[in-house]
Image (tube, rainbow, N blue to C red; front, side, top):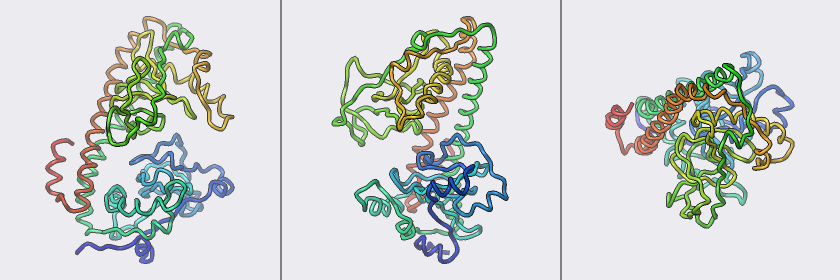
Length: 396
C-alpha cells in the first residue's frame, strides 16, 4: 500500500477522523460548572500542566458531548503559541476543551494512528503549512478551524507509521519514565521534610534570615535574540518548560544572577511557586527570583520552606488582575524549618533525591534533542526506520 495525501476535511468526510475546537468558557461554565476547562497555557509539548485531579463518571462524560477530552485525543494549541501538541493520557483526568484548542480523534482501526498524528504535528510538513496560515490577521497567531481542515497530511501505510512510533515512542517513553522518577523524588523530599518538622520543635524564622533571595536583572530587549547567541535568558514563561526561548548578549556585571540546574527559582507575577530549575545554565531576567538556604539543608530545604509562605501570598493577591510579588511582600513572611540537628539529617537523605531529579532532567533533554533530530528525517523518509532503530538502541 502506498502513501496517501489528503486534507483533514477529506478525512472528516470519509468518517476517518473527528476534529473540532473547544467551546467558549461561558457556555462550559453554564452547562457543566463542575467540569475543569483545559486552557492553552496548560498544554505543553507532550504533556498537560494542570493541577486538576478530578475524574468524571463515564455516564456524565458521555452526556457532555464531543468537546470533552477522551484518552488518546491529539490536542493542538491554535492561538497565541500555535502548535504545541499533546496526547491525552489514558488515565485521565477529564477536561472540557477551551476555544483555543483543537482536538483530533482518528477512527479506531482506520488508516491514521493517533500517535503518528501527534508526531506529524511536530514535523516540517505541518509547520510549512501552519507558518503560512497562522499570521493572516493583525492579532496574535491563530489557526482557524477552517485553516486546520485545509491542511494536507501524507499518510503512509500503517506498518510505516508503527515503525516511526516505535522509534520516537521509545525515546518519549524513556522521558516519561524519567518524569515519573522525578515526581516520585519530589514527593519523597516533601514527605521527608514533613517528617523532619515533626521531630523535635521546628523553628519559625523571618524568610530573609532563613533563605537568601536573589532577583533577576533588567536585561535590555535590544540585546535579545532567538538564534542562541550569548547566554540563555530565564524568564517567567520558561519556568514550566525549562526551555528558554531567548538569549542575551548583554552583561550586567554585579547585577546579574546565574542559575545552575537544580537551583530553586520562582516567578514574581501571577503564580508564586518555587520550582527546581531543570534547564541549562542561564541568567535570570527580572521578575524571577532564586532562593538558597542560609541554614543548611541544600536546595531541597529552600524549596520546601518556601512552599507555604509563597502560597499564602498568592492566595491573598488573587483579587488583582495580575498578582505581583515584591521584595516588600517577602520581607513580611516567615518560614518554618526543622530544628538544627534535623536539618543535616534531612539534607543527607534529600540530596540524592534532588540529584536524581536533576540527572533525570538532563538525560531527558538529551533524549528530546535526539528525538527532535530524528523526527523530521523519519517523517520525510530521509532516514529509514531500521537505521533510526540502531541509533536509538544505544541510548534507551
